[in-house]
Amino acid sequence: MTETDPGAPPLAGLRVVEFAGIGPGPFAGMMLADMGAEVLRVERAGDMRPGAATDVLARGRRSVALDLKTDAGRAAALALIDRADAMMEGYRPGVMERLGLGPDICRARNPRLVYGRMTGWGQTGPAAAAAGHDLNYIALSGALWAMGDADRPPPVPLNIVGDFGGGGMLLAFGMVTALLKAARTGRGDVVDAAICDGTAVLMAMTFSMRAAGLWSDRRADNKLDGGAPWYGVYRCADDGWITIGALEPKFWALLLDRLGLDPAAIGDRNRREDWPRMRSILAETFAGRPRAHWQALLENTDVCFAPVLSPMEAPDHPHNRVRGIFVTRDGVVQPAPAPRFAEARTPLPAPPPVPGADTATALADWGLDPALLAQLGFSKTG
Image 1: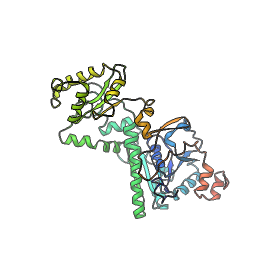
Image 2: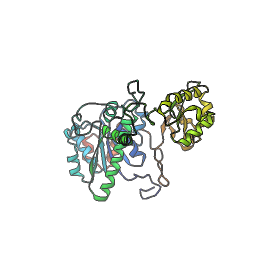
Image 3: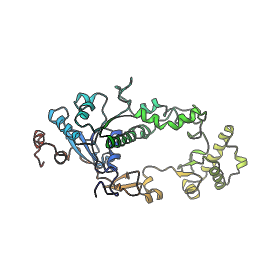
Image 4: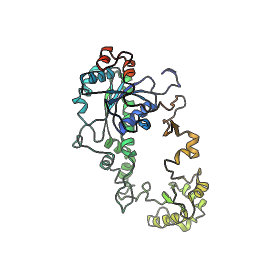
Protein backbone atom coordinates (compact mmCIF):
# COMPACT_ATOMS: atom_id res chain seq x y z
CA MET A 1 0.00 0.00 0.00
CA THR A 2 1.56 3.30 -1.10
CA GLU A 3 0.87 6.85 0.05
CA THR A 4 -0.90 7.48 -3.29
CA ASP A 5 -3.29 4.59 -2.65
CA PRO A 6 -6.71 6.07 -1.67
CA GLY A 7 -6.89 3.39 1.02
CA ALA A 8 -3.60 4.44 2.59
CA PRO A 9 -3.76 6.21 5.96
CA PRO A 10 -4.22 9.97 5.45
CA LEU A 11 -0.73 10.94 6.69
CA ALA A 12 1.18 8.06 5.08
CA GLY A 13 4.58 9.20 3.82
CA LEU A 14 5.09 11.93 6.43
CA ARG A 15 8.05 11.66 8.78
CA VAL A 16 7.84 13.19 12.26
CA VAL A 17 10.48 13.31 14.99
CA GLU A 18 8.89 13.41 18.46
CA PHE A 19 11.02 14.35 21.44
CA ALA A 20 9.41 12.23 24.13
CA GLY A 21 7.56 13.96 26.94
CA ILE A 22 4.41 13.41 28.99
CA GLY A 23 0.71 13.98 28.39
CA PRO A 24 -0.27 16.28 25.54
CA GLY A 25 2.89 15.87 23.43
CA PRO A 26 2.67 12.07 23.23
CA PHE A 27 -1.08 12.37 22.61
CA ALA A 28 -0.41 14.55 19.56
CA GLY A 29 2.19 12.01 18.43
CA MET A 30 -0.35 9.22 18.85
CA MET A 31 -2.89 11.10 16.76
CA LEU A 32 -0.38 11.61 13.93
CA ALA A 33 0.79 7.99 14.12
CA ASP A 34 -2.82 6.77 14.17
CA MET A 35 -3.33 8.60 10.88
CA GLY A 36 -0.33 6.88 9.29
CA ALA A 37 2.59 9.27 9.84
CA GLU A 38 5.95 7.67 10.57
CA VAL A 39 6.61 9.09 14.03
CA LEU A 40 10.00 8.40 15.59
CA ARG A 41 10.23 8.98 19.35
CA VAL A 42 13.51 10.33 20.68
CA GLU A 43 13.86 9.24 24.30
CA ARG A 44 16.44 10.31 26.84
CA ALA A 45 19.22 7.72 26.99
CA GLY A 46 18.70 5.51 30.03
CA ASP A 47 15.14 6.75 30.60
CA MET A 48 12.93 3.69 31.07
CA ARG A 49 9.36 4.96 31.26
CA PRO A 50 7.33 3.03 33.86
CA GLY A 51 4.47 1.14 32.26
CA ALA A 52 5.94 1.56 28.77
CA ALA A 53 4.43 -1.71 27.54
CA THR A 54 0.89 -0.47 28.25
CA ASP A 55 1.44 3.20 27.30
CA VAL A 56 -1.26 3.62 24.67
CA LEU A 57 -0.11 7.20 24.03
CA ALA A 58 3.16 5.78 22.63
CA ARG A 59 1.60 3.32 20.20
CA GLY A 60 2.51 3.25 16.54
CA ARG A 61 6.06 4.56 16.87
CA ARG A 62 9.61 3.32 16.97
CA SER A 63 11.85 4.58 19.77
CA VAL A 64 15.47 5.72 19.75
CA ALA A 65 17.51 6.71 22.79
CA LEU A 66 19.89 9.66 22.45
CA ASP A 67 21.87 11.66 24.96
CA LEU A 68 21.17 15.18 23.74
CA LYS A 69 23.86 16.59 26.04
CA THR A 70 26.58 14.94 23.96
CA ASP A 71 27.88 16.10 20.58
CA ALA A 72 27.05 12.75 18.96
CA GLY A 73 23.53 12.72 20.41
CA ARG A 74 22.81 16.24 19.18
CA ALA A 75 24.30 15.46 15.78
CA ALA A 76 22.07 12.41 15.47
CA ALA A 77 19.01 14.43 16.48
CA LEU A 78 19.82 17.10 13.89
CA ALA A 79 20.38 14.46 11.22
CA LEU A 80 16.92 13.03 11.94
CA ILE A 81 15.37 16.50 11.83
CA ASP A 82 17.10 17.14 8.48
CA ARG A 83 15.21 14.14 7.06
CA ALA A 84 11.85 14.90 8.72
CA ASP A 85 8.76 16.76 7.58
CA ALA A 86 8.03 17.78 11.16
CA MET A 87 9.24 17.55 14.73
CA MET A 88 7.58 18.09 18.10
CA GLU A 89 8.90 18.89 21.57
CA GLY A 90 7.27 19.57 24.92
CA TYR A 91 9.98 21.13 27.04
CA ARG A 92 9.88 24.46 28.83
CA PRO A 93 10.68 27.48 26.65
CA GLY A 94 14.40 27.78 26.00
CA VAL A 95 15.38 24.16 26.68
CA MET A 96 15.69 23.16 23.02
CA GLU A 97 17.61 26.35 22.27
CA ARG A 98 20.13 25.54 25.03
CA LEU A 99 20.56 22.07 23.53
CA GLY A 100 21.30 23.57 20.14
CA LEU A 101 18.07 22.19 18.72
CA GLY A 102 15.93 25.32 18.65
CA PRO A 103 13.72 26.28 15.72
CA ASP A 104 16.15 28.78 14.20
CA ILE A 105 18.91 26.18 13.87
CA CYS A 106 16.61 23.35 12.75
CA ARG A 107 14.72 25.42 10.16
CA ALA A 108 17.92 26.91 8.76
CA ARG A 109 18.99 23.34 8.00
CA ASN A 110 15.54 22.18 6.84
CA PRO A 111 13.40 25.14 5.65
CA ARG A 112 10.32 22.98 5.01
CA LEU A 113 10.35 21.68 8.59
CA VAL A 114 7.25 22.13 10.76
CA TYR A 115 8.52 22.66 14.31
CA GLY A 116 5.85 21.90 16.93
CA ARG A 117 6.13 23.20 20.49
CA MET A 118 3.83 22.01 23.28
CA THR A 119 3.68 23.91 26.57
CA GLY A 120 1.12 24.80 29.20
CA TRP A 121 1.50 28.59 29.25
CA GLY A 122 3.00 29.16 25.78
CA GLN A 123 6.38 30.36 24.56
CA THR A 124 5.73 33.93 25.73
CA GLY A 125 3.94 35.74 28.56
CA PRO A 126 4.64 36.32 32.28
CA ALA A 127 3.94 32.68 33.21
CA ALA A 128 5.87 31.11 30.30
CA ALA A 129 8.83 29.91 32.37
CA ALA A 130 6.78 28.68 35.36
CA ALA A 131 5.80 25.10 36.08
CA GLY A 132 2.16 24.12 35.82
CA HIS A 133 -0.29 21.33 35.10
CA ASP A 134 -3.64 20.83 33.42
CA LEU A 135 -5.67 22.16 36.36
CA ASN A 136 -3.74 25.44 36.38
CA TYR A 137 -4.10 26.01 32.64
CA ILE A 138 -7.84 25.38 32.49
CA ALA A 139 -8.28 27.62 35.54
CA LEU A 140 -6.65 30.53 33.73
CA SER A 141 -8.85 30.10 30.64
CA GLY A 142 -12.16 30.42 32.49
CA ALA A 143 -13.11 26.80 31.81
CA LEU A 144 -12.68 25.51 35.37
CA TRP A 145 -14.85 28.29 36.84
CA ALA A 146 -17.74 27.26 34.61
CA MET A 147 -17.80 23.66 35.93
CA GLY A 148 -19.53 22.24 38.98
CA ASP A 149 -22.23 23.15 41.48
CA ALA A 150 -22.88 26.75 42.48
CA ASP A 151 -22.44 26.12 46.21
CA ARG A 152 -19.21 24.11 45.97
CA PRO A 153 -15.68 24.75 44.69
CA PRO A 154 -15.09 24.03 41.00
CA PRO A 155 -14.34 20.31 40.67
CA VAL A 156 -11.02 18.78 39.68
CA PRO A 157 -11.91 17.25 36.30
CA LEU A 158 -9.98 14.65 34.35
CA ASN A 159 -7.18 16.23 32.36
CA ILE A 160 -9.11 15.71 29.12
CA VAL A 161 -10.11 19.36 28.66
CA GLY A 162 -6.63 20.84 29.07
CA ASP A 163 -3.88 18.33 28.38
CA PHE A 164 -5.62 16.46 25.61
CA GLY A 165 -8.38 18.69 24.19
CA GLY A 166 -6.78 22.12 24.51
CA GLY A 167 -3.24 20.76 24.34
CA GLY A 168 -2.41 17.63 22.35
CA MET A 169 -5.33 17.81 19.95
CA LEU A 170 -4.66 21.49 19.17
CA LEU A 171 -0.97 20.67 18.62
CA ALA A 172 -1.90 17.87 16.20
CA PHE A 173 -4.27 20.24 14.37
CA GLY A 174 -1.56 22.90 14.23
CA MET A 175 0.97 20.40 12.89
CA VAL A 176 -1.31 19.22 10.08
CA THR A 177 -2.24 22.83 9.25
CA ALA A 178 1.42 23.84 9.00
CA LEU A 179 2.24 20.71 6.99
CA LEU A 180 -0.43 21.70 4.46
CA LYS A 181 1.19 25.13 4.23
CA ALA A 182 4.63 23.57 3.77
CA ALA A 183 3.30 21.33 0.99
CA ARG A 184 2.02 24.43 -0.86
CA THR A 185 4.89 26.82 -0.23
CA GLY A 186 7.95 24.72 0.59
CA ARG A 187 8.29 26.66 3.84
CA GLY A 188 7.57 25.14 7.23
CA ASP A 189 6.60 27.03 10.37
CA VAL A 190 6.81 26.99 14.16
CA VAL A 191 3.66 25.85 15.96
CA ASP A 192 3.34 27.42 19.43
CA ALA A 193 0.66 25.21 21.01
CA ALA A 194 -0.24 26.16 24.59
CA ILE A 195 -2.82 24.42 26.74
CA CYS A 196 -4.14 27.72 28.09
CA ASP A 197 -4.62 28.97 24.49
CA GLY A 198 -6.30 25.77 23.33
CA THR A 199 -8.61 25.57 26.33
CA ALA A 200 -9.71 29.15 25.67
CA VAL A 201 -10.52 28.12 22.08
CA LEU A 202 -12.65 25.27 23.42
CA MET A 203 -14.59 27.90 25.39
CA ALA A 204 -15.58 29.80 22.22
CA MET A 205 -19.28 28.91 22.41
CA THR A 206 -19.46 29.76 26.11
CA PHE A 207 -17.93 33.20 25.52
CA SER A 208 -20.28 33.69 22.56
CA MET A 209 -23.34 32.88 24.67
CA ARG A 210 -22.07 35.11 27.47
CA ALA A 211 -21.66 38.02 25.05
CA ALA A 212 -25.24 37.50 23.89
CA GLY A 213 -26.56 37.56 27.45
CA LEU A 214 -27.37 33.84 27.32
CA TRP A 215 -24.84 32.64 29.88
CA SER A 216 -24.76 33.41 33.58
CA ASP A 217 -21.44 33.65 35.42
CA ARG A 218 -22.95 31.59 38.25
CA ARG A 219 -22.04 27.91 38.07
CA ALA A 220 -24.91 25.46 37.51
CA ASP A 221 -27.16 28.30 36.38
CA ASN A 222 -27.19 27.61 32.63
CA LYS A 223 -28.64 25.14 30.19
CA LEU A 224 -25.36 23.33 29.53
CA ASP A 225 -23.64 23.36 32.93
CA GLY A 226 -26.11 21.30 34.93
CA GLY A 227 -28.39 24.19 35.83
CA ALA A 228 -31.31 23.07 33.69
CA PRO A 229 -33.12 19.99 35.02
CA TRP A 230 -33.46 18.52 31.53
CA TYR A 231 -29.67 18.50 31.02
CA GLY A 232 -28.05 16.65 33.87
CA VAL A 233 -27.02 13.47 35.66
CA TYR A 234 -29.40 11.48 37.88
CA ARG A 235 -28.92 8.69 40.40
CA CYS A 236 -30.86 5.44 40.00
CA ALA A 237 -32.20 2.98 42.57
CA ASP A 238 -29.09 0.74 42.28
CA ASP A 239 -26.71 3.71 42.68
CA GLY A 240 -26.06 3.69 38.96
CA TRP A 241 -26.26 6.98 37.07
CA ILE A 242 -27.89 8.18 33.87
CA THR A 243 -27.68 11.33 31.75
CA ILE A 244 -30.54 13.31 30.26
CA GLY A 245 -29.91 15.91 27.53
CA ALA A 246 -33.43 16.82 26.37
CA LEU A 247 -32.51 20.40 25.42
CA GLU A 248 -35.07 20.86 22.64
CA PRO A 249 -38.78 21.11 23.62
CA LYS A 250 -39.76 18.17 21.39
CA PHE A 251 -37.25 15.90 23.11
CA TRP A 252 -38.42 17.13 26.52
CA ALA A 253 -42.02 16.37 25.59
CA LEU A 254 -41.01 12.86 24.53
CA LEU A 255 -39.13 12.32 27.79
CA LEU A 256 -42.12 13.33 29.88
CA ASP A 257 -44.34 11.06 27.82
CA ARG A 258 -41.98 8.09 28.31
CA LEU A 259 -41.83 8.77 32.03
CA GLY A 260 -45.60 9.20 32.33
CA LEU A 261 -45.26 12.71 33.73
CA ASP A 262 -47.92 15.37 33.16
CA PRO A 263 -46.32 18.39 31.37
CA ALA A 264 -48.79 20.75 32.99
CA ALA A 265 -47.98 19.49 36.47
CA ILE A 266 -44.20 19.41 36.19
CA GLY A 267 -43.74 23.12 35.46
CA ASP A 268 -42.72 25.60 32.76
CA ARG A 269 -39.27 25.10 31.22
CA ASN A 270 -38.98 28.82 30.58
CA ARG A 271 -39.47 29.74 34.25
CA ARG A 272 -36.22 29.34 36.18
CA GLU A 273 -38.24 29.44 39.38
CA ASP A 274 -39.72 26.08 38.34
CA TRP A 275 -36.35 24.42 37.73
CA PRO A 276 -35.69 23.20 41.32
CA ARG A 277 -39.10 21.55 41.51
CA MET A 278 -38.70 19.98 38.05
CA ARG A 279 -35.30 18.62 39.05
CA SER A 280 -36.73 17.19 42.26
CA ILE A 281 -39.50 15.39 40.36
CA LEU A 282 -37.03 13.93 37.87
CA ALA A 283 -34.60 12.91 40.62
CA GLU A 284 -37.38 11.14 42.54
CA THR A 285 -38.58 9.41 39.38
CA PHE A 286 -35.16 8.11 38.33
CA ALA A 287 -34.28 7.08 41.89
CA GLY A 288 -37.24 4.72 41.86
CA ARG A 289 -35.79 2.22 39.37
CA PRO A 290 -32.34 0.72 38.62
CA ARG A 291 -30.22 1.95 35.73
CA ALA A 292 -31.07 -1.07 33.56
CA HIS A 293 -34.76 -0.15 33.71
CA TRP A 294 -34.10 3.32 32.35
CA GLN A 295 -31.82 1.93 29.67
CA ALA A 296 -34.57 -0.41 28.49
CA LEU A 297 -37.11 2.42 28.46
CA LEU A 298 -35.08 5.34 27.12
CA GLU A 299 -31.95 4.18 25.32
CA ASN A 300 -31.77 4.72 21.53
CA THR A 301 -34.74 7.09 21.57
CA ASP A 302 -34.93 10.84 20.96
CA VAL A 303 -35.12 11.71 24.66
CA CYS A 304 -31.31 12.21 24.50
CA PHE A 305 -30.30 9.57 27.03
CA ALA A 306 -27.21 7.55 27.92
CA PRO A 307 -26.15 5.56 30.96
CA VAL A 308 -23.05 6.70 32.84
CA LEU A 309 -20.60 3.89 32.16
CA SER A 310 -17.35 3.20 33.94
CA PRO A 311 -14.18 2.75 31.85
CA MET A 312 -14.57 -0.96 32.60
CA GLU A 313 -18.13 -1.02 31.23
CA ALA A 314 -17.76 1.27 28.22
CA PRO A 315 -15.96 -1.15 25.84
CA ASP A 316 -18.78 -3.70 26.22
CA HIS A 317 -21.69 -1.37 25.47
CA PRO A 318 -23.48 -2.53 22.26
CA HIS A 319 -23.04 0.79 20.45
CA ASN A 320 -19.33 0.91 21.25
CA ARG A 321 -18.91 -2.72 20.22
CA VAL A 322 -20.70 -2.30 16.87
CA ARG A 323 -18.64 0.76 15.93
CA GLY A 324 -15.41 -0.74 17.23
CA ILE A 325 -14.72 2.32 19.37
CA PHE A 326 -12.51 0.25 21.68
CA VAL A 327 -10.07 -2.49 20.74
CA THR A 328 -7.92 -4.90 22.73
CA ARG A 329 -4.35 -5.82 21.89
CA ASP A 330 -2.02 -7.84 24.09
CA GLY A 331 -4.56 -7.54 26.89
CA VAL A 332 -4.61 -3.72 26.74
CA VAL A 333 -8.05 -2.19 26.15
CA GLN A 334 -7.67 1.08 24.25
CA PRO A 335 -9.59 3.48 22.02
CA ALA A 336 -9.37 2.80 18.30
CA PRO A 337 -7.95 5.52 16.02
CA ALA A 338 -10.41 8.30 15.21
CA PRO A 339 -11.80 9.88 13.14
CA ARG A 340 -12.57 7.31 10.46
CA PHE A 341 -12.73 7.85 6.71
CA ALA A 342 -14.74 6.56 3.76
CA GLU A 343 -11.63 5.45 1.83
CA ALA A 344 -8.50 5.85 3.91
CA ARG A 345 -7.84 3.07 6.38
CA THR A 346 -6.59 3.75 9.90
CA PRO A 347 -5.88 0.37 11.49
CA LEU A 348 -4.67 0.10 15.07
CA PRO A 349 -0.96 0.96 15.00
CA ALA A 350 1.79 -1.21 16.42
CA PRO A 351 2.03 -1.59 20.20
CA PRO A 352 4.05 0.90 22.27
CA PRO A 353 7.82 0.42 21.86
CA VAL A 354 10.31 -0.39 24.56
CA PRO A 355 12.14 2.92 25.08
CA GLY A 356 15.26 2.98 22.93
CA ALA A 357 14.68 -0.48 21.48
CA ASP A 358 14.87 0.70 17.86
CA THR A 359 17.87 3.00 18.17
CA ALA A 360 20.26 1.18 15.82
CA THR A 361 17.77 0.07 13.20
CA ALA A 362 15.74 3.28 13.08
CA LEU A 363 18.79 5.53 12.81
CA ALA A 364 20.11 3.37 9.98
CA ASP A 365 16.72 3.29 8.24
CA TRP A 366 16.57 7.09 8.39
CA GLY A 367 19.89 7.17 6.54
CA LEU A 368 22.23 8.45 9.23
CA ASP A 369 25.93 8.46 8.35
CA PRO A 370 27.63 5.18 9.37
CA ALA A 371 30.41 7.22 10.97
CA LEU A 372 27.88 8.94 13.22
CA LEU A 373 26.32 5.58 14.06
CA ALA A 374 29.76 4.37 15.04
CA GLN A 375 30.19 7.41 17.31
CA LEU A 376 26.95 6.42 18.99
CA GLY A 377 28.23 2.88 19.45
CA PHE A 378 26.34 1.20 16.60
CA SER A 379 27.51 -0.47 13.45
CA LYS A 380 25.70 0.25 10.18
CA THR A 381 23.52 -2.82 10.68
CA GLY A 382 23.13 -2.41 14.43
